[in-house]
Length: 306
Image (cartoon, rainbow, N blue to C red; front, side, top):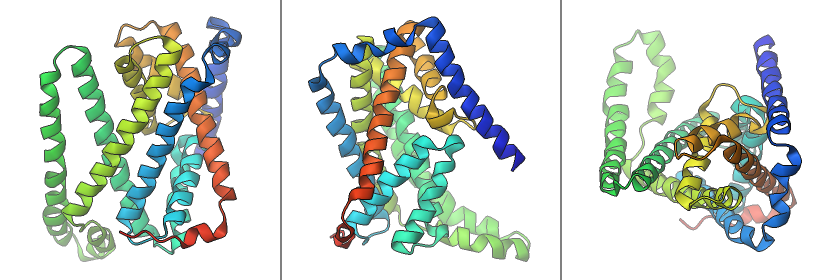
């Protein structure tokens, strides 16, 4: 309890630190003025792309637990997305098993295994897109097929370890420990085809989402799309950090600036654009998360045809 309180205070402190740093170095008027200068029409395409990525994430959920109600999958995804973006220290992830249990009667063990795979594949796709974008920026696009091979090899190797090696390791442990691990080991026995489909959904989601975020960053920082994508990935990668600012404030911008500097973009421009990108992200998160509460009850009755 005490440790949680300390982490929450750190999160709030980081957010306050961001507000202070921006005010002292740039001034909030300068940071927010571009919202009045950029045409609202410019935000239509990235907004629809992000909404499309939300649908892809819902489809991933539907495919994993097929067949489940399509409406419930969308509601769960939007609410989960709201909590993980607002609550500190990734505590919002805990809403995933709770929501699945409440709406679909799916056991927490099953939902946690799914969530673990989602996050592993999320990170895999993020690193693949980042490496590929860097290769493109540095004029060595020939490396991209190597990255593709690495991603394609990762999945079957990991699947083999979990389905063949893990059960043997678990069986070699003391019986009391083996009995405790058996439910987890059983939950890991998944078809490789299911994981390939999950990878496809995940990659499509991240490509759409990062192009949208890269485009928004490009509008504010006046850079090319590749630089915008690299910078956006910096913000998204902060999700793996043990400590976050409130609603990601501070840590998200730090990630954006860190990777922006590798593209020779100056820190002040990157910080201002990172703040505005984060505001765009949070606005969509809030609107869709709150909007999910307004979906009609019968929306849950639409069943996934897969």
